[in-house]
Length: 270
Picture 1 (cartoon, rainbow, N blue to C red):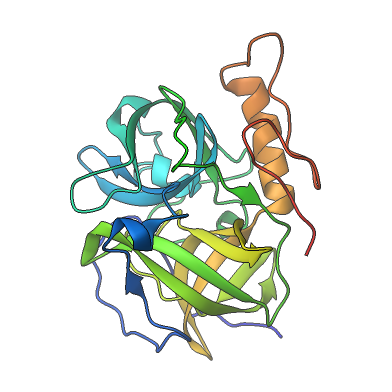
Picture 2 (cartoon, rainbow, N blue to C red):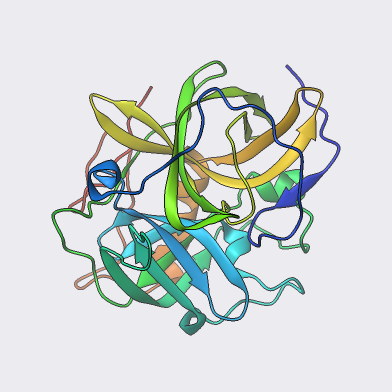
């Protein structure tokens, strides 16, 4: 199915009111520690003087978010020391809070301001290096899975406008299709949801299959647009290995399909 989008809007800041479509299941606010259990690796990524995005832990010292979150509107890079990641932030308390020492966007990503372009959405991912690893039993890095197919059910954990103090879970929404390497979903997103991890649950474990980039309107109404991770994330991690801080004893090691790295990130085939 081909989608015709009338407008693509990045979701970093909570400014513009848009009509809401009914989600497949409603957003549920994760108000208690029990409700949050298993999702502690999702956190709010605050940007001093600018706003916030959502991000998720994929290694003990590395988080994944949308690339446009690390750019100013004029296309300049935001300094790493303006970021703070609060894992599992809930009503002012976080499971862990870390600063950022560096960040790397996908090498093919080009920032063109607040209005997204399809080619940007397809590679709208970035990784940020934490100033200290998060090593807590309750906060585990998420595995990464290959992209789902049209009709598959996914879920999303996000912060957003009007719910910035605690994450919300939409347990079931659907992949409507793919277009130009962009995943189209009917998940309920809002400003602040940029960088939110989209999950599929396999064998009881949530695995990230996409990162929220933008929202748009099509013939189906409001839709969420996300980056399909498999090839773009491989390219990003390869780029990170040459530009980011090297691991002791060698360069960064890529995450391969079916292979676990020492901190739990993994690709799984559908």
